[in-house]
Length: 336
Ligand SMILES: Cc1cc2nc3c(=O)[nH]c(=O)nc-3n(C[C@H](O)[C@H](O)[C@H](O)COP(=O)(O)OP(=O)(O)OC[C@H]3O[C@@H](n4cnc5c(N)ncnc54)[C@H](O)[C@@H]3O)c2cc1C
Image 1: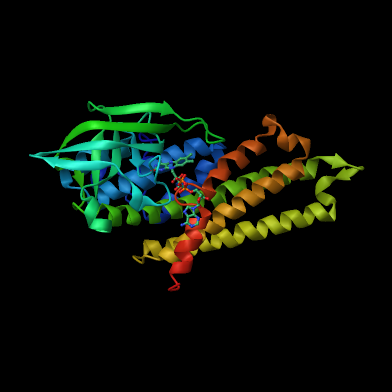
Image 2: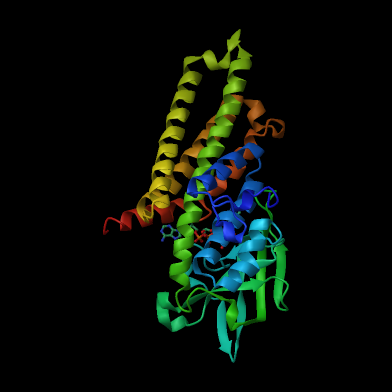
């Protein structure tokens, strides 16, 4: 994908990208659904929409050359380390510490559920540099994964997304130079919240695309499969199921596109990004579930791949912030 330019569609040409606008990234997310492999799509999205963007946004020129450019070329794989065994939704509760020691920082802690964690060459790591400073005590680091003390503990087993590796990582006295700080010292929380907006919007686009994919496959099935002497799609109840699903998909798509347009034009519409992520993830799971039903027993069989899509899409209501956290962000945006 790097050789074909797919990892840098919306990235600046000076770092090997194609220089496209934000929509090109949406096109990639949508087309990846055609692989029928949510795990592959997620691994790629971590690279293109979760790790390269913060390096380009907050990194030094040297960091961009060292990490972003080879990541765009597909020569280096990146991962993002926010979640810890005791802190997921509550990002502010992370415990991974980075302590200054002369010209270096010493990092200790652990991260879990890290996509690409077993294959990655480098990690965008969220740490606390000043635990007393609240939201101003976080700092991001760019840490090579082959440093002494970086331990890839366990390859975690999952419900779906099997093509993507998910790691439990430990950091034991990992020494990095001060030049490994990504962005401003003490501003890591704000940097990562900014990163999360792009992650959620692309996740929303992927949910819509996944829903459309499984809808299309099921539509074909409903036209061919017969029961009681007629195609199952010709039963009014089935026809209405497709009408309901199509309406859900279209509302989610319109919300994603409108929000993406605002994002591309320099706005920072956190509320609508959050709504798009929530809505798209929910309807995608509803659609995939209904498609299993329309397939009957075949929907439950691996051969048809519908159950796989359901398992893959199910993550979208959890990853990048759960439904409940999305609802809270939206509710709080009204001053509640
Ligand atoms: C396959 C997979 C890949 C992932 N990839 C990455 C990755 O690459 N990098 C990374 O850093 N993380 C990654 N994650 C982690 C993911 O972002 C977290 O799982 C997610 O944010 C939820 O955190 P948690 O699992 O700790 O759940 P918890 O925070 O423990 O939440 C458990 C439940 O409590 C609810 N809850 C928590 N707080 C509240 C609240 N305030 N109000 C109401 N309800 C609440 C949640 O909604 C949820 O239902 C991945 C997760 C998975 C499953």
